[in-house]
Every structure is written in C-alpha cells, then in structure tokens.
Image (cartoon, rainbow, N blue to C red; front, side, top):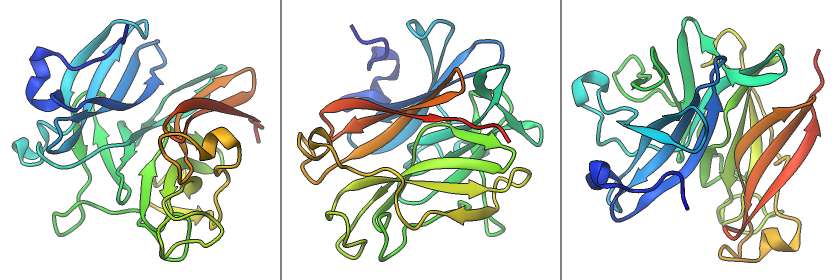
Length: 254
C-alpha cells in the first residue's frame, strides 16, 4: 500500500491529480522531510510531509502557503531540492546562513528559505519578483526545462545541484527532442545564489533499452533520489516513466 496518498484533509490540493514526485532528505536527528507536488489538475504546488520512520507521514500542507501573508499560495511550483551535506557518514539537511535552504522549479530554478523546514518563503529579487538563478538554454540539452532533481549537496568545492534537463527542437541535436537528460550546476559554497559553473553536456542520459522505451518513448532518465552509504552516492531515477533505476559513484573527499 502507498505510504503517501491524497486524503480528505487536503482534497482541494491533491484531488483528482495526486501526490507526485517526492524528494526526501533527513535531518541530523533522524527526521525525514518530504517535498512533493500536490496536483489537483489545475495548479501544481509544493507540499511538505515529515516522518520518523519513512512509513507513517504527517502532511503539513503547502510549502509556500503562509509566505508573504498568503500571497503566493497559488503559485505554480514543484521540484524542491533541499540543501544537504555529508556528516559522520550520513547525508543530512544543512543550513545556509542560519536558515534551511532549497532550490526549486521546473521551467527555471529559483530558491526558498525556511526557519522550520515546514513553512518556506520563495526568494524575491529587488523588484519583488521570483529570483531566477538558472534558465533553459537554446541549443543545449536543457533547452526546454531545468527541473531540480534530488537534494542539493554542499561540498568543499561548492553546492552541487543535479537537475533534469528536457531537450527541445531548438536544443542539442545529439539527443532526441523531448528527451530528459541530467545536468549539474555548481553554486558558491558561501553564496548559494552565485552560479559558478554548469555542464554543457549531460552527465547522465538515456542509453539502455529500458531508458528509451516505455510510457515516455523519447527517452528519460529522471533523477530524483540521492542516498549516501559507505563512501558511495546512490542516484535513483525514473526510466521512461516505466521503471526505476539506480546509478552509483564513488564520493571522494577533498
């Protein structure tokens, strides 16, 4: 049985669409925090749930529901990548300048901060609009979308944000139109809004038969989960919207 599903308490947020695209991270004291898309087939909105055991979840409603006196509660928002780091052999949620921090967004990448992991405020620019950190690029694999992937990881070299790029007709001809490939962004370790570097080619793209056939025939490796165990990172991803895969790499400390 599912551990998270639409219920009567949040019927206006989650019915008839559902609870989608969960991204999970853990605090240092073992509390799990999930960011998922509450989808009522009208507007997609980030929602938050917490758990002590990954099985029983408590829903807290919209992540941006109380921000700016409720003015952004109907903002289309999804794909939250909360800032984490590796401490004592575990991948845990980290604060930035005294607050919890996340990257979020599908059509572009934005940011948000929180005091309690439950209530979040989108970061605004000097004109009071959403601060945009990264946009799609014509001629590249991420020409249609730049959607945040698993939790961002703070390293000594900076903050690494893995994201899902969608290719368009005006994108990279090396990949099919509509294909989802994975990219990497590097932000400053002390200034999470400062982009230092960005891959021009995806580090991960549909290759295997099960990544190129299924419900999404254009090909998809949609990265969403990241775990750390015994000096290795485990990247979990969707394969053409039909299967789940995992890729493993060594995590080298510097």
